[in-house]
Length: 100
Image (tube, rainbow, N blue to C red):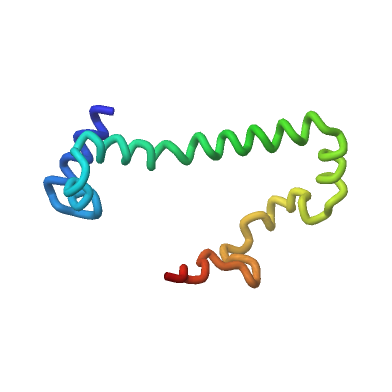
């Protein structure tokens, strides 16, 4: 945590990004703590979801059978796995604007 605190402190002192603005309402130690949560919080979520997926597949034979029988959920051949970096048609990473 000390290394993160040093890097966040240097960023705040340099004035780059959103971290200097965060010190208007938070102490530097709070900014460091929030930076740690943002950096490492996603790891725990992904780990938990992956564990839950495998637990449900391996403890319920019907779930495993459903995955095996659903063609689109099967593993693609390795030569095609990363053939396209474009998202599927109709896919979007944006959402409609929020109303006031």
